[in-house]
Length: 499
Image (tube, rainbow, N blue to C red; front, side):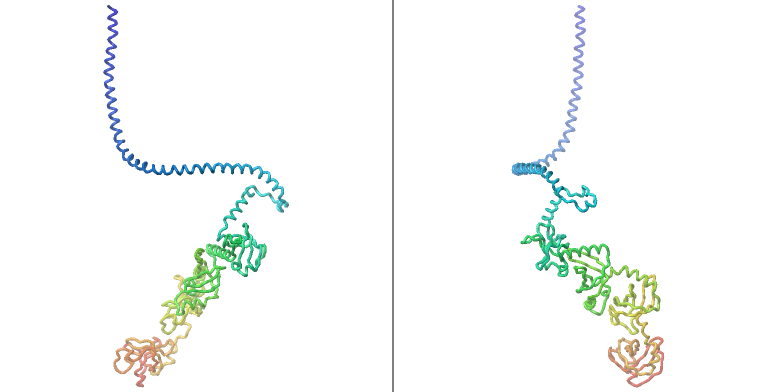
């Protein structure tokens, strides 16, 4: 009985354990179902977001499929060609490998056959390995020279023959080059001798006879263009002869190149003048100009020079020197450089001074061109020097005697004089007795009676006999009368007054 009770007692925990296990399994199942639900909730938005991208990619994939299908036959066609080339490459490699032992055998023989150079006899050190030509380098250069010769190339050659047919030149090519007589300057051709080195221009790499057609003239021209550019970059000052002109400026020659100097860049052609521009430029042919190159454009055969810029540094230095030297009252010699409405500029040898129109002459001047011309060599009187503003004022009339200084001695009130009508005004007419001396015929002194305008009685250019009725030499005023000259009436010396 006791044994049975013990067995019953031992069996009870097993049943309770099963019950406990069942109770524990329920929460686990709940947790698992909850996790699955959470995963589904999180994954669904990502799937939804990816669907548009998938929709975009699918057409691209569909579009690419025909291209792939089209490329497959091309790939298939190339594969046989590759298969054909591979044996050829392998055969070439075998030939190169077979030739290497022969080259190695020949090189010592070539070295032994070469005579020792004079430099080696006097102990000149052997060239460094870097200076020695690499195997095959000379051949490569030769091939390059044979194949790379093109029109426009400039190469150095050696004269082989000179005759009436032309000049034969060895340029290191597979055949000699020939220079036709039309492509060689006659003076240069006569100086050439066999063995002379010359620079030549390739006109045609190969003609029917197998020669290379060359030019000496064009090679020299290319050298001249190169030197012109170098001179421009170096700001070099040149002195060249004027060989011609056109409507825009002067023509000069630099070597074999024709250069152009615009009229605005020539000191003597600047400013207005009564003389035609072409006449002024024609006078400059044969003269030398100091010039500076300001533009070189080989492709357009364009070479532009300037005298103004070439002289600018020198003129600035000379101007400072003149400003420090000049004194009021001095007489200097200069050249008229330009004309304008208000006066004339005179080059004093590096600095320009101005002669105002009022200082050109004692008589009235309508325009400076009536008195001076550009290029005239004249003496001028220095009337003012402003060193701060760097201005020089000059006068031409101060070198002439003032006409009014002798008027009081030559003329008297009541004298009859011959004068020329020069200008008309509403209040009267002006008449010139001599250069620099003019008087006024008041409208009331023209004729008896009332006159509406002087033009009703006289006109510009009329030469008349007039009577001096008033005179004031200090104020440079002279009263004249036509009415009193005709009537024979005389008057005493009266003070000039305004009417």
